[in-house]
Image (cartoon, rainbow, N blue to C red):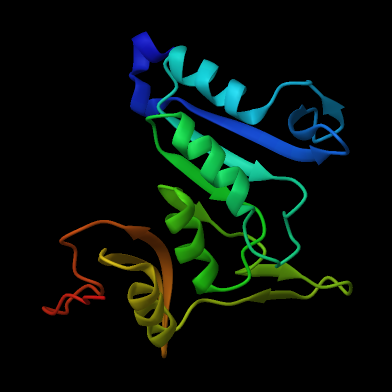
Length: 178
């Protein structure tokens, strides 16, 4: 597939759980079946096969709002030369920066923005402009680009990605520097 479509088009999702006395292991079939493989070994093999990005999901952290599994991110991102996207556990914009500092190329956060309550009510929240500026300061020497999807008063519905030389808000001439 990588030869046909290009490496940039091929993403592998690696679902990981900690196994007692064995450490991290890759799971399949919705986290039910342990492959016995370590995620670093799996990621290296995926890269050799032509994968262009890794979506690294900590099953243990997913939906817990306790932050990303930074040790897992660090192990996998140091072992490969392709982007690693961290998912599972985000509770605040500070967690985005911590994941980036651990080696993630990008982050994903589902429950943090859309959380379904027991009575089927859905709460959708977005980081404020102030929160986004704070993560820039927390993250270090990178700019943050915010790509609006829906304009809400006082908020920016956003996909956040760290790239140098990009302005923070569309229509604003100033770049936010850490």
